Image (cartoon, rainbow, N blue to C red; front, side):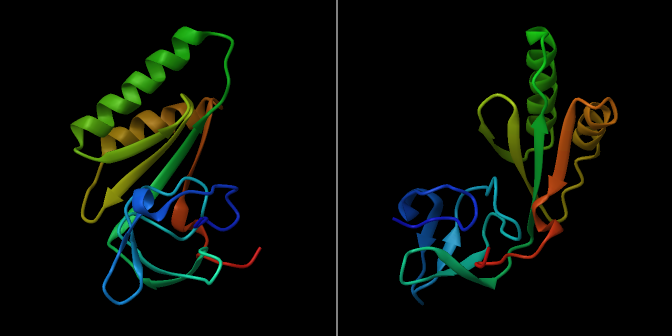
Amino acid sequence: MPTWPHSGWTGRWNSCGWSLSDGTYSIACIPFRTYGLALGDQVRLSEDDEVSEVVGLSSHRVLRMLLMPDSVPEWLGATTDRIKAEIDAAGLLSEWSGDRHVAVDIPAPANPSKLFEVMEREVSAGRAFWEWADAMPFSAKP
Protein backbone atom coordinates (compact mmCIF):
# COMPACT_ATOMS: atom_id res chain seq x y z
CA MET A 1 0.00 0.00 0.00
CA PRO A 2 1.51 3.38 -0.94
CA THR A 3 2.30 5.76 1.89
CA TRP A 4 3.13 9.41 2.47
CA PRO A 5 6.51 9.61 4.24
CA HIS A 6 6.48 10.85 7.85
CA SER A 7 2.70 11.30 7.92
CA GLY A 8 1.54 8.03 9.43
CA TRP A 9 -0.92 7.83 6.52
CA THR A 10 -1.29 4.75 4.38
CA GLY A 11 -3.66 4.67 1.45
CA ARG A 12 -4.36 3.57 -2.07
CA TRP A 13 -2.89 5.50 -4.97
CA ASN A 14 -6.10 5.21 -6.96
CA SER A 15 -7.63 7.64 -4.44
CA CYS A 16 -4.74 10.10 -4.02
CA GLY A 17 -2.67 9.84 -7.18
CA TRP A 18 -3.08 9.23 -10.88
CA SER A 19 -0.66 6.92 -12.62
CA LEU A 20 1.06 8.60 -15.56
CA SER A 21 2.44 6.87 -18.63
CA ASP A 22 6.07 7.33 -17.60
CA GLY A 23 5.70 5.40 -14.31
CA THR A 24 5.26 8.47 -12.14
CA TYR A 25 2.14 9.66 -10.31
CA SER A 26 0.33 12.96 -10.20
CA ILE A 27 -0.92 13.84 -6.72
CA ALA A 28 -4.72 14.04 -6.84
CA CYS A 29 -5.46 15.04 -3.25
CA ILE A 30 -4.32 17.83 -0.95
CA PRO A 31 -1.52 16.56 1.34
CA PHE A 32 -2.21 17.24 5.03
CA ARG A 33 0.91 16.19 6.85
CA THR A 34 3.76 16.00 4.35
CA TYR A 35 5.97 18.97 3.54
CA GLY A 36 6.94 19.92 0.03
CA LEU A 37 4.02 18.31 -1.82
CA ALA A 38 0.93 19.85 -3.41
CA LEU A 39 -2.00 18.93 -5.60
CA GLY A 40 -0.81 18.12 -9.12
CA ASP A 41 2.85 17.55 -8.24
CA GLN A 42 4.44 14.66 -10.10
CA VAL A 43 6.12 12.04 -7.89
CA ARG A 44 7.94 8.76 -8.14
CA LEU A 45 7.29 5.83 -5.79
CA SER A 46 9.89 3.60 -4.16
CA GLU A 47 9.80 -0.19 -4.35
CA ASP A 48 7.90 -0.03 -1.04
CA ASP A 49 5.20 2.14 -2.66
CA GLU A 50 6.23 5.25 -0.71
CA VAL A 51 6.57 8.64 -2.31
CA SER A 52 10.32 8.78 -2.81
CA GLU A 53 10.92 11.79 -5.04
CA VAL A 54 9.23 14.85 -6.50
CA VAL A 55 9.95 14.91 -10.23
CA GLY A 56 7.72 17.83 -11.23
CA LEU A 57 6.08 20.67 -9.34
CA SER A 58 2.63 21.98 -10.11
CA SER A 59 1.85 25.67 -9.67
CA HIS A 60 -0.12 24.86 -6.51
CA ARG A 61 0.63 25.48 -2.84
CA VAL A 62 -1.03 24.01 0.24
CA LEU A 63 -2.11 26.19 3.16
CA ARG A 64 -2.83 24.16 6.28
CA MET A 65 -4.63 25.32 9.40
CA LEU A 66 -5.27 23.58 12.71
CA LEU A 67 -7.91 25.11 14.99
CA MET A 68 -7.32 24.69 18.71
CA PRO A 69 -9.84 22.73 20.78
CA ASP A 70 -12.23 25.07 22.55
CA SER A 71 -14.77 24.68 25.32
CA VAL A 72 -17.30 26.71 23.30
CA PRO A 73 -18.61 24.51 20.45
CA GLU A 74 -20.41 27.49 18.90
CA TRP A 75 -17.05 29.22 18.29
CA LEU A 76 -15.67 26.23 16.41
CA GLY A 77 -18.79 25.88 14.27
CA ALA A 78 -18.89 29.59 13.45
CA THR A 79 -15.17 29.67 12.64
CA THR A 80 -15.26 26.63 10.36
CA ASP A 81 -18.34 28.07 8.64
CA ARG A 82 -16.46 31.34 7.94
CA ILE A 83 -13.42 29.45 6.63
CA LYS A 84 -15.56 27.21 4.41
CA ALA A 85 -17.47 30.25 3.08
CA GLU A 86 -14.24 32.03 2.11
CA ILE A 87 -12.83 28.87 0.50
CA ASP A 88 -16.03 28.57 -1.55
CA ALA A 89 -16.10 32.30 -2.40
CA ALA A 90 -12.52 32.10 -3.69
CA GLY A 91 -13.33 28.97 -5.74
CA LEU A 92 -10.63 26.94 -3.98
CA LEU A 93 -10.43 23.24 -3.21
CA SER A 94 -10.02 22.02 0.36
CA GLU A 95 -10.01 18.87 2.41
CA TRP A 96 -10.83 18.57 6.09
CA SER A 97 -9.44 16.07 8.59
CA GLY A 98 -12.02 16.13 11.35
CA ASP A 99 -13.59 19.47 12.22
CA ARG A 100 -10.40 21.36 13.15
CA HIS A 101 -7.78 20.64 10.46
CA VAL A 102 -8.08 21.97 6.92
CA ALA A 103 -5.73 21.85 3.93
CA VAL A 104 -6.47 24.37 1.18
CA ASP A 105 -5.19 24.13 -2.40
CA ILE A 106 -3.93 27.54 -3.57
CA PRO A 107 -3.22 27.45 -7.31
CA ALA A 108 -1.25 30.23 -8.98
CA PRO A 109 -2.33 32.99 -9.48
CA ALA A 110 -5.11 32.77 -6.84
CA ASN A 111 -5.11 35.49 -4.21
CA PRO A 112 -7.58 34.49 -1.49
CA SER A 113 -7.03 37.58 0.67
CA LYS A 114 -10.38 37.30 2.49
CA LEU A 115 -9.57 33.70 3.47
CA PHE A 116 -6.18 34.86 4.74
CA GLU A 117 -7.92 37.57 6.82
CA VAL A 118 -10.25 35.04 8.46
CA MET A 119 -7.39 32.65 9.18
CA GLU A 120 -5.06 35.41 10.42
CA ARG A 121 -7.72 36.58 12.89
CA GLU A 122 -7.83 33.11 14.47
CA VAL A 123 -4.03 32.76 14.54
CA SER A 124 -3.61 36.23 16.10
CA ALA A 125 -6.16 35.34 18.78
CA GLY A 126 -4.18 32.19 19.63
CA ARG A 127 -7.01 29.92 18.49
CA ALA A 128 -5.22 28.37 15.50
CA PHE A 129 -1.91 27.56 13.83
CA TRP A 130 -1.26 27.73 10.11
CA GLU A 131 1.59 26.91 7.77
CA TRP A 132 2.48 26.52 4.14
CA ALA A 133 3.25 22.93 3.13
CA ASP A 134 6.23 24.19 1.14
CA ALA A 135 7.80 25.74 4.26
CA MET A 136 10.22 22.81 3.99
CA PRO A 137 11.17 20.80 0.90
CA PHE A 138 9.91 17.26 0.44
CA SER A 139 12.15 14.59 1.91
CA ALA A 140 11.69 10.84 1.79
CA LYS A 141 14.09 10.53 4.73
CA PRO A 142 13.03 11.11 8.37
